[in-house]
Image (cartoon, rainbow, N blue to C red; front, side):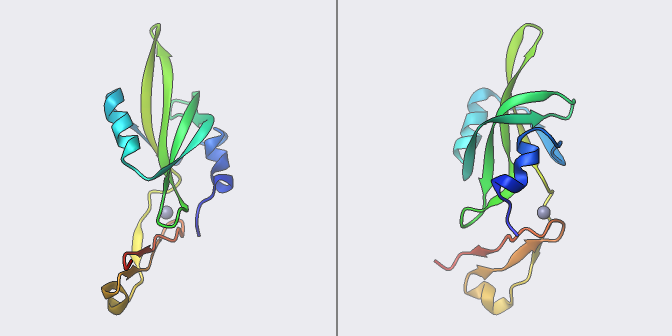
Length: 131
Ligand SMILES: [Zn+2]
């Protein structure tokens, strides 16, 4: 199983609250540095239902696994007005708090093929490090 933009749409459009949402208290340069350093697919402006029940316009940076499939995880960058000032915030979001289970044989691992999946949501988390 892999996540797609369609399967993630209820969360990306703010209809459903993300099961995992974590505020990252970072400076703006640190936030941008983080987003530059990860393998992500940026979305156009979407909606984030935050854990205070507010709907915020945001831009998502969705994590991609090996081969380009979405992992159901990402970051949301948005700004909120508070006491007359705009504050940029970055939160980490995920549909699942993945729990990885490896199913490769020792021989497959030796050849760089690491079959694995999430025991909670079924996401294929296999990694091919042979190439
Ligand atoms: Zn999972």
